[in-house]
Image (tube, rainbow over all chains, first blue to last red; front, top):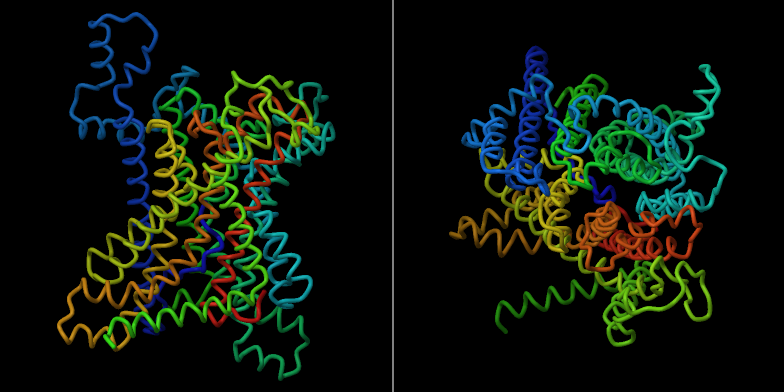
Length: 344
Length: 296
């Protein structure tokens, strides 16, 4: 839902300030600031989760005992057991303490600890989202560079057009279409079939077979934004004087591109890629739903039909927290990689 | 001639210039025409068709019928005409898309202008909040909101609007900062203009064109978001939208039945409308930002 097409608003104000000795100090301060910011964001996620799933919906005891005969004493006992009679701030601190100990509550539906359920589902999501993101980034950047270098050429028009069309598609719809079109060629859901012979290779092949369509769907919808960001980032570099110098000293066209233009255009793109990680999470939720891929996205979808509030709260906190942590890592990594960011 | 009429004449001529440029952009023009057609069709549905066709209890067509002369796009799992459903679905998708965009752009502009205009801790806090919402996966938050609030179009609009504003806010903030650095703002302040005067008379008029471009792009993603939320079963169960049609189709097993006629039209609707909005937005962007000239 993040609009990848909106002109990139640069959040960092870069001003060259070369103060040699205080550089290390500045770096330390920057890192501390970012880590602090991320911790604050994590806390906000927890607060938001608490407000959304514990405060807004009302009394969980009513939800848990819906449709069953209950007497007032039993309800009072349950309320006491869940600590619902305490004031909200106390309840929140209690909740925070549980979170720190890795206790995310118990699912209404599965009657099992939420943390355990989430732990089982992390692997498939990482596999699917990781593979798709890597391929989508590579594809998007490569096509973006070629589009920008021959701007307004036939190749540029077609690749930008295709990317925009795919971007306009709801992820899940593309998945449904692929399912209908490919028929029995690929499994329609799940991560492995029951009749696979034991052994490492057959199992890997089986999982790969199941992964083809979900991966394709995610790549198709996600790569467009990488392409567009790379393209506009490179277009901005193309007018720069150093490229004329590079050409003037006799470098071939693709040397100019590979050695000079692309490295400079790549770093802002990488920032954007990480800024839009949330999009990958959104994609994972819908793709996993369509293809019954047993990951966190499908778990979220399963929790919706209840709604299984503790489970939803768990997936909310984990997914949002993961994106925040990844962003922080990307930000720190970028600082190591890009001397321009380091200098600012 | 009074001062304000000069201002208006200047704005009119600027708008005419934008329109002249826009007219020269083929993609943008096609997008605009398609949008016009879709809006007219959506407005005309109640006049041209009978809403009774949406009522499951009042149709007697065969279930899951493939396209035929009588039902051009076939029928759904309850025998309703898919063409009729898709046509009615246009209304909900457009209304939700536009309403969510108004909310999102409204919040984004407000926060963006305030964050740039007032410095200090207020600005720092607003930026912190914007950063937080920017990083947060918006679909996850939207799902959370629409689960705990009562089902309905209002909830969907709120869920999309509240989660999609940060990029607008950053854009508006950056633009406001560049404008507030110009000498005429200093002049206005020196002449005794207060915050309201500076923001209302100088900053907003200069920021609005950019906001408008951003709006067309936001509508596109809001429509996709609506279809996604409805597909996950979080939409208004009493209304037909493109997303809810796809939800019904999936839940009722349209994929295993190979009922492509039920799956294709609502998705195509989303693609056409979203593409139309994006190409309008990109054309406007090119017109308003001279650096992008030379692109199609």
